[in-house]
Length: 279
Image 1 (cartoon, helix red, strand yellow):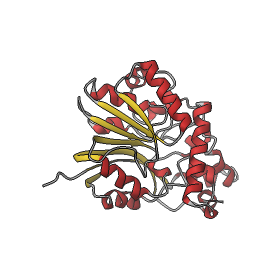
Image 2 (tube, rainbow, N blue to C red; image 1 turned 180 degrees about the vertical axis):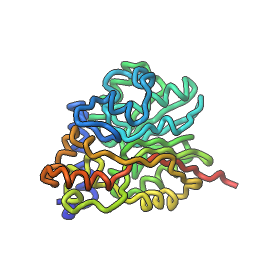
Image 3 (tube, helix red, strand yellow; image 1 turned 120 degrees about the horizontal axis):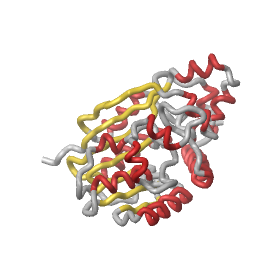
Image 4 (tube, helix red, strand yellow; image 1 turned 135 degrees about the vertical axis):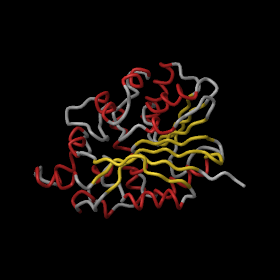
C-alpha cells in the first residue's frame, strides 16, 4: 500500500515500472487515447503532428506523454535544451531538429533501460547533438545556468518532491530561460483505493497533485510568468492500455460508474514559466 512506502520506495517502483516499459516497448500515459491505441495514434491525439512522428527513429515514440512540450517551447537554432524524464528520446530528437546542428539537447532519465534505448535511437538517427545522462530530476546531472529551455512530458507528476524537481530545473536554466511542461494534475482528491495503488502511481495518476499545488511548486522554485497554456480532461480509458493503469481499474472493481467518477478528477495541463533575468 502506498501509505506504507517512503519516497525512495516510490522511486524504485517508478523505475521498475518504466524499466518494464522500456523492455517491452509498450505503455500509455497520455490524454485522449483509447484502450486499443498505438503510440502513433496516442501521440497524434495529444498534440504531435504526423511530420514530427515521422521525423524520429522507429522505437523512440512509446506513447508515454500527456501533451507536446515541443509545441510550447518555441525552441530556436543554437539553443541548449534539457528534457526531464527523456525516456526513449522522442522529445529530445524533435528538440534536436528545432535547435539545429549548432544547438544541443540533453535528456535525463533514471531508468537504465530507457537510456539504452534512447542512445541506440540516437545512433540510429545520427543525432550527434543529443546526449542522454543517467540521473534523477530532483538532482540533475547538469551545471548551473547551463540551458535555455527545460521541457518535460508527463514525468514530474511521478516525483514525490515536486518543488525540488522544479528548483533543479530553475538552477540549470540560464537567466531568462524557459520552462515548458505537459503533466497530469488533479481537479479533486482521488479515492483512497487509487491513491494506495503503487501501479497507479507509476501509471501517472496517483502521484499527481492538485493544479494549485503544482503551480505553487513552480512559483516557489523561483519562476515568474507562470501560465497554464492548456487544461483539458484526462480520459481514464487511456490507462486501460497501460499495465500499471489496470491496477486502477482493479481498485474500482471494474465499475463503469466508478471509472467515470475518477475520470472527472484528472486534467492534463501545459504550463510555462520563466527564470528571471538577473539585474
